[in-house]
Image 1 (cartoon, one colour):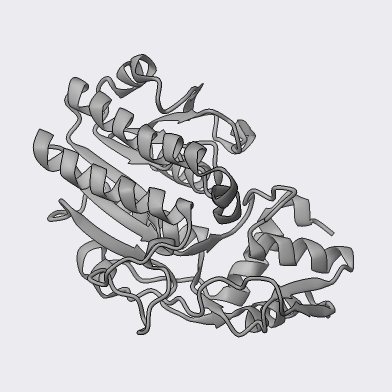
Image 2 (spheres, one colour; image 1 turned 180 degrees about the horizontal axis):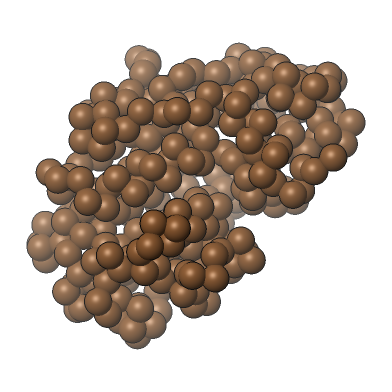
Amino acid sequence: MIFLITGAAGFLGTALANALAREGHQVRGLDDLSAGNPDGLSPAVHFVRGDVNDRPRLWSLLQGVDVVYHLAARVSVQESILYPREYNAVNVGGTVSLMEAMRDVGIRRVVLASSGAVYGEQQVQPLHEEMRPRPRSPYAVSKLAAEHYICTIGDLWGIESAILRIFNAYGPRQNLPPTHPPVVPHFLRQTLKGGSLVVHGDGRQTRDYVYVDDVVRALVAAATAPNLNGQVINVGSGRETSVRDLAAAVAQATGLTPDVIYSPRASAGVARMRADLTRARALLGYAPRVDLVDGLRLTLKRDPRFSR
């Protein structure tokens, strides 16, 4: 099969592109490199630097493509609060541009990487796909809007769509920006450097941490699974882990004991998050295989930034 991946040089995009290339598929990748790095891509991946809003470039890359994976997005919750217009332009505008180009070329299936962040604060756990989303940041709003555009435009123009709400993915080569880095690689780096782990709030807030290989398996399955049109599907570990427990897991994986400092005045975000995986099992045959401590150890082993 022939695939186009937008955001191919990002954390998930690179892992997905390399996995598809290993399976012998023809993979084309597009990324503007605002946050991604193409160095991790297999030489078998045909990579092009470009903007997802560039329709002429999309027309060229989409020729002969069977399935599009739409992963291009800005992904920082905190950054989105400062720059909501930019997040709307990329995450929403880029989605519409892609769908228009797919219509023009005649592509018939798209898989959107959305986010568990769209659920926001909910009174009941685990989080299932029929819950009313309550996004709490411009980032989450933009991902929810992209979901609606994908489904609505897909129905109007005959493009089959599948939406995967990915929870807190982690693994090797995850981007570590200087401000507001993802918690898993940040905790690993701080621990290996002998630094302290700063926990926002009391550390009892929970998240669903899912290893990148499990996410990739779900994405790959979504390319060919039947009866996915218009479906929204959670992808996570199905386990609820507090930030306190994450710090303990990092200590176990590294064999080190970092100091943990609590910052009660800092925002801890939503109180709880855990993905209900019932629909993922039924539609994708998905079941996570990597538990948190093993995933942390694999990250340390496979990411050269953490070599000791």
